[in-house]
Image (cartoon, rainbow, N blue to C red):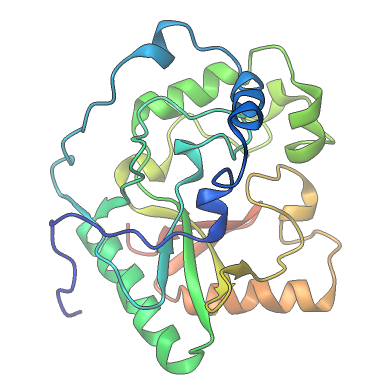
Length: 240
């Protein structure tokens, strides 16, 4: 595969959702911020640019690729940023994984020019995995439960296979992804949102024919990746 990925800074292309609070008043932004669980000294620490781990690269841009790292924001199952994620949302991957993502985006631009790939997660540091595991043992926010894990106690998310103690994300060989309409940034209907920990997100979920076709299209686009049966958005490099 042609070497397309280099280790220079990434210019991110984010969907409208990345800037969802741009139009809010100061009072509204404060209200949203107050809804995020307090993190004590963790939230007060200064933002530090972490070095890229050995053997990994920062993903370069492509005309049909967008990055919106949800775990660097409040738009994920925990309702807050995870430990170890930078506010600038850099997508870091092992080099062969990054090459495979770029190849998929290039092929998509030729076969389906109206569509693009949106990445929700790339490399996930172990400190973020540990933070996510610790979150499963904390008191449940009922609002988040209804949005992300309506049918399961969050203390069972690890045993149910939704959250892993050792993730391929920490090796830089996994991505969370979907397809979007490129002109608007609107995700295709896959039947559930990202981080929706329920049978509906898996291969046996009762979804519409259109939703199932969209999931199959996503799998065909990410042809060098292996899908995860419980989560339609999670893909690991086939030869990781």
